[in-house]
Image (cartoon, rainbow, N blue to C red):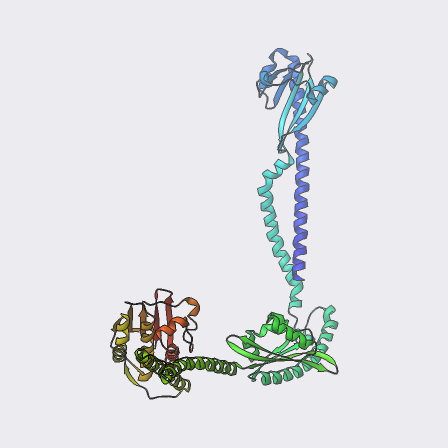
Length: 548
């Protein structure tokens, strides 16, 4: 309302201003234009009278005039012009004012410039000797006059606009201020226009009814919110059109939503075809179940329709977090599959070699070879079992005794154990350790360093290097193992710390290893609340940092 009043006042004032300027400008222009034409004709008659009386001295009379005069012979030849050389001028017999003067004794015309910003007024008179005397004067058109006056018009318009703005704003404020002060929470207590009293009375009555109903609804809503917000399960209530009526805290976390989602269609929360299909099925009256993954967690969704006296009122979605259960099931299946394969492979080799020895089918010169194979596979089997036991102990989250561990001492111990393996492959094992000690489990620290160095040697190139560094980085202790080996392509980086995961199974079989070393490293680092960082490029080597 205030805006409409303001705009109306401003529009009226500016319209009156524009019309006034246009009318005034037009009136003044016409008045002065007529006066100038009268003066031109008067001057023409005066000059013609002199020339008729003093015919021989006409050039002096013409040149001393403030107007432009042109003397034209009866055949249209220009005899003299006060502004332009007459020899350069065309024949004027076809000019309107000349034709009219030859016919009637006096003539006139007006011609505009190509830009319409200037016009020239011509007046002509026939002299006694038959020649035509023409007087002319240039005059600005309304367009040119308007352009020349534009700065003043703009200034006046701006001043009028400012004054109008102030007056319109004040008027609108005076009219609407009593309305803006209305207290709609207490309609009966307002002192305003008499015309509004009946409306305010009705509002007061309705206000009391609404407040009573709202308090009752709010109490029920609070009770409902307290119940559902304390649930670990996600709860979403939809109406019959799929609009969200309520969503508890667990569901908001699951669907990454906030309070603004209430009142919107469920499609704005989740657009996956699977979920929307089962929601539509539930809206049609069917019960549906679905497993989904969100934000690294797995959920079981139970979706049912809400029916009251055969009428579908909406849908309820219950979401149960089954991440731990699903993870345990998946790990159990993967572990069973992997351990069966890993145990079966060396056992088959041992059984095959033993059968050849038992049946006497082995040649005498090959007996030592088969015995060595049995020893190698049995050793691999024992190492595998030991690694499984280590992982089992780490999974149990037992709290072994901690002590002060000298990292340099552990590194040197690992270097001594792996020196033969490094020499066989021609790999140089270099140590660069600051004298650092940490609080932890020595056996776990040993496993970390041993497995990282063992992998770096196994997957290195002949004549390569393994560098073990221990140093302080700000408030952290860093164990860094770098090699010049075959490297790991980026698509495997996220999975190499999983149990039995091998980048290249054929290559891993040649190099040995149980496939559990890096998994042991991960669990041992997690036990010490540390983190792992991996940098590796295929064919360029690998660097693994343990930050404690």
